[in-house]
Each structure stands twice: as structure tokens, then as C-alpha cells.
Amino acid sequence: MFFRNRFLFLLALAALLAFLSLSLQFLHLIPVNPVKEDGLNSKNRKRIMPDPLTEPPPIDPIYEAKFYCNIPSIPERSMEGHAPHYFKLVSVHVLIRHGDRYPLYAIPKTKRPNIDCTLVPNRKPSHPQLEAFIGHMSKLGSEAKMDSTLSSMPRYPSHLLCEMGELTQTGVVQHLRNGQLLQDIYIKKHNLIPSDWSAKHLYLETTGKSRTLQSGLALLYAFLPDFDWNKINFRHQWSAIFCTGNCVCPIRNHYLGEDQRRQYSLRVTNIQLEKTYADMAKIIGIPTKQLRASNPIDSLLCHFCHNVSFPCTKNGCITMEHFKVIKAHQLEDEKERQEKKYYYLYALLATYPLLNQTVNRMQRIAEGKGEELFVLYSAHDVTLSPVLSALGITEARFPRFAARLVFELWKDGKKNKEYFIRILYNGVDVSSQTSFCRDYNQRYNKPMCPFEKFVRFVNLDMFLPFNATNYYDACRRRLF
Image (tube, rainbow, N blue to C red; front, side, top):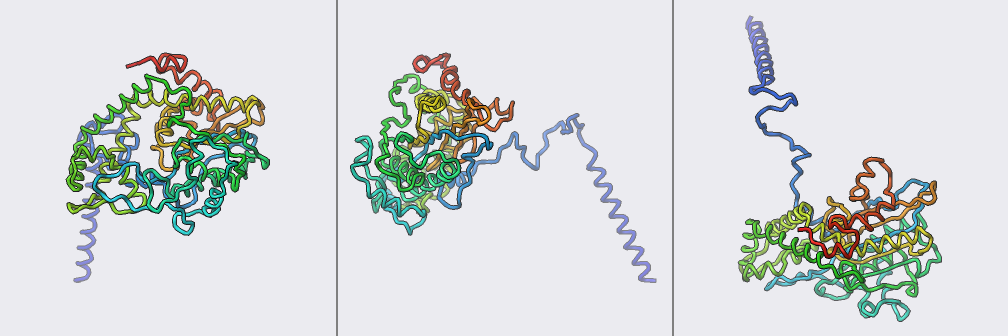
């Protein structure tokens, strides 16, 4: 009897719980406030998941810093050289940023990071071709053709304690990897450079800094191993924006100044950043203004990329939290720069001479008048960044160490006179992100961008924001 009553009791309890559960579910289906036709409550409701269209995930400054360091690790995947089988690759232009370097600025009253800039093949990071690269650079004699400014520079870094701005072993390895990757694609797969190549097939240009010359040589060595020095002619470019003979442009400088004022306004309104600078200055024992002028993020990034502890004094240590605040502000500045138009207008005028050279060389190749199959510009972040902006590639990250921007010229094998262009940034095809191919790609869903669109962009569209039709007039017409 006892077990029978207990069984009935448990059965009744289960039925009651089921009834309550159903009732609660039913009650939750009844909206307290009226529901609109789109299914959303008339009052704002707290979303559990963020809306990807309106709430981008917060930027992680540490992740972005690691990406910027570009420490050589796993083999890189890339989209260079990808095209339908009936397309023929006819010319490649590569614009690189130099590899990892020692800081350009020192934080006052702190010990410089102890980094060895000699090249040691059995020290990480390394590369299978590093030892051979050192040997080949050491063989350099009078047969090398270089502008006088470059001929006196060392061909690879060699100081036990890096000098300011000197390329590190990491930087050399980064570009050996770049060169090997491009060799695998353009030479082994597409036979871009003939086996009997000569100096006329290459165009090489670098700024007058040892880190850009050495980066270019590292990439070139892995691209053309054991190359004949008689066939190499590196030209010196005195301007960081590669403006050559077209550097006089007053309005370009005006918009650069406007963007610098924007930067200043953003910085002084960042209370957390100012507190961070003040705290760091107190630790170091210098005025905040002096610390800010020393551009501490440059030195701190070197510590971070090389896994070296941040500077310490008797008053304490600079911490990861300090670094995160400054790096986060840097990322915020890059974001605002894209939203405002000052830098974009500066970029159009700053990069026209370089893009115009690129178009002219490609046109000569298409017309059968040119022979430069591979063009290499070894440059800086201040070279690549405005090029990306001018092309309209707004989603691109700020150029990391050893960043590469590649322009590929292709010939359609089915329609013999039609040429197409692909633009790749760090191995990612960004052609459809450019302002001149964005609409075409969306409308026609073609694998490549017609070369004529790039030509029109450089010859005309770059001047339209200035209500001008040529570079000279654009450089002298202020909009606001």
C-alpha cells in the first residue's frame, strides 16, 4: 500500500511540474509590448548576440600588434598567380615595405633593447637560404650596378647591437620568405622570367636606407637564387613616396597637414591615452611632452616583436597595459583616418607619380614595346599606406613589416588583345576592393579587372575629386 501511494504521489508531482513548465513557456510567448511587423519589439531589447552589420567586434590591440610584427612561422598561403588556365601572366610589379627593423626612436633615460643584428643561420628565425644569401652578398664586387648613393651601403646587417633603424635578421628572413614564395609562383609555375634573363627584364628601385636596400636584395636573392651581379641594377629613389620628378605639389602637402591636425585633435581628446603617457613619463622621470615627442610606440613595438621586456627604472616598469592603450589609440587613429577625407586626398596626389609609372610600364608591355617582366620597389610604410588609400582599399591593415603589394598584368588567351590586372596585398586578392573595379566585379562577377579600368583611374579618375583633369592642376586646386 505504501509503495502504491508513493507511486501515485510521484506521478501527480510529475504532472504538476509538466503543467507549470508548459504554462511558463506559454506565458513567454505572449509579448508584454506590441510587436512590429518586422518581428522586433517596439521597445529596445538587449541583444544576446551582436549584430554583425552594426556592431563589429572590438579590435584587439595585442592581436593587431602580433600581425604587425609578422614573425616568420608557418608557410604562408597566397593568391598570387591564380587565374583561369587560358590567361597568360606577362608582368609583375611588387611594392614592398622593408622587413623588421630596430627602432628609429629611443625612449629617453631607458636602456635600448639589446638586439643582435648580425646574421646567424642557426639562430631563429632563420631560412634555408640565409647562409647562401650571406655568402652571395659578400661576393659583391665592382661588377654590381648601383647608383652611387647605394653602392657604399652594406648589403646585409652586421652589428652586434643594432643601430637605429637597422634591418634585423627577422627582417632579412621575412623577405627571403617573400622572394621564395614569389619564385614558386611566378618562375616555377608561370615561367615569368626566362632562364636566359638579362638586366632588361628587371626594374629595381629602392630608397636610400640600408634597410630598404637589404630587404630588396633579400627578396631578389630568394626570387633569383645566386643571381649574376652583372645583371642587377638597383636605382636610388630619394623620395619615400617615389615621386621622382613630380614632387612639387602644394595641395598634397596641404592635405597632409590637415590630416596631421586631425591626428592631434584625436590624441588630445583621448583622456586614457594622456593618462597613460603621464604615468609612463612619471616612471621614466621625464616631462610628458618629451615622452610623447619620442614616439614611444616605435620602441615598444620592437620590444614586443622581439619578446624583450619593456623598459624599467627605479620608479617602476612600463607595462603591457601601457602598450595596449597606445596601440589601441593607433588603431583608432587609422580607423578615423579612413573615415575622414584629408588623408585620402593626400594619398591621391602623393601616389600618382608611382602609379603613373606602373601604368606606363604595363602599357608598354601590352603594346610589345617593353621588356620589364619583374619590377620591384623597396620602400616604407609611408609609401604603401597612401597607395592602399588611393586605390580605395579601405579595409586593408596598416602595412606590417615586410608587407607586399603586387600588381599582376595578365593577357586573355582567348581574346588576344585584352589585358587584365590583379592587385594583391599580402597574398590576398583585393582587386574587387579597389574604387575602379568594385562596381565591375559586383556587376559582372569576373575573375579579373580589365586593365583599361586601371589606366582610366590613373589618367583621369584620380583627379576628379579635385575638379581637375591632370596632375598639375590637381596639385594647385584646394577643395576645403
